[in-house]
Length: 309
Length: 231
Image 1 (tube, rainbow over the protein chains, first blue to last red):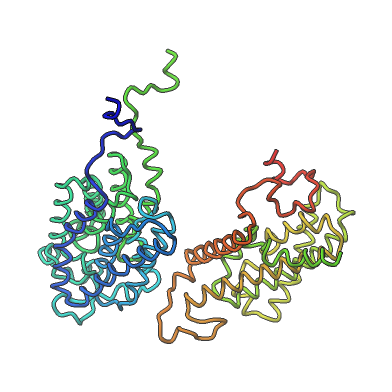
Image 2 (image 1 turned 60 degrees about the horizontal axis):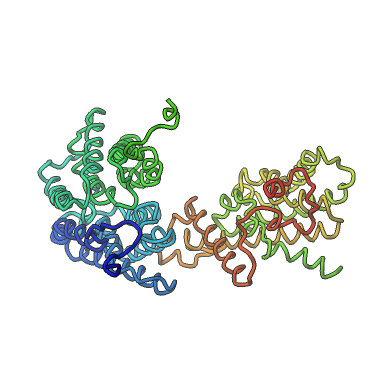
């Protein structure tokens, strides 16, 4: 009888989700937007994404080998980081900055802070900011879809002078980074993740809603604000990163609203055309505090002062 | 005796390097090291002030009353900083412009005050000068190294000469504050790794055991926060 009872410490019931499975779901969700980016931006887009994914996996592999740590490329988190970084690249950028971005994402932002689960900001987002600050001219050299050669500004920079129609924006036939152009396909990917219960819709809904609402209140075009630029990609795939977003429901709401407010403030009052990356990074840094402030009360918990009464 | 003096001198170079091991003077370290030239300029200016103030404070160590020693130290240091600032302004206006507010701020540079408090006020003249010289050279070396690294990656030049700037676009972030913190962190990590290899403890714990002045400290100084914490 005794041999049949296994004695161990909690947790006794485990969920079947694995890091690998979740990351695979994220990759599947990103595929439509990625393929669309390949089609409209051509081989340069394919190369950007391929180089980013390969370089991120290689960085992760080499780091683990050199520091004699258990190999972690199998959990696919580095592949997702690479994919998202690649999707954030403007097609006109030179290819060597992909490698610098990947090293920054995996080595500096992720592994130096302890690897998956310990990074304090989203690796792909951190790398994008590092590249944006370092090479501002490359990171804003977007190309026209299907033409592949003409470099032009993103619709978000053109809003006041030559706005693009909602339909063009929604389906993604406009200049931008590889994966940020098609709001429709990103939404499809987001719905897949929500249906698979990989992400909770709270953060994207709050983020997108607040950005649109504030822009509308300020007299701008709320719909234009969320369809152009990186709001969709950022809100659905980057702000929902498990490691760097709050775990509680209210925390997620605060996180999403904060991202929306900062994005709006940077776009409206800042000198930068786009504020999504900075908004996510700033809220990433606040995440531990949001978690602490919104911690759930344990069932049956009584406040210290009330116990005596 | 001679070897002890040599020891005092070499202390500041690596073993107790003020920037990397004692983590003092971080503000000028991060602020002025956008180019190797600025690092050298700042390092030399601070070294001159450090040696002179150590010399004078050591000479006056029995005259200065314990209760007002900090104001007295600051006054002495401020005097030398004024002299250095005028000299820099007169002979190398370019460096004066690059260092900006950080040149007069040498007055409150932690390294100089720390060496006055921990060393010069307790030791005779020759070791004090050597200590100031060693610490100053250690400070200059780290600032120059950091400036060179940031200048190389951030502008593609070293000491103003183009190295890679003609064919590779430099990473501007190295010239900005995040790059400064990054390079600083890397250098501290490197110095910790080197110290670990030699079997020396990493500087992270406070208390008298790890105090850089433990050899010359009688543990009775009121202001020694390390001693207080240890108690």
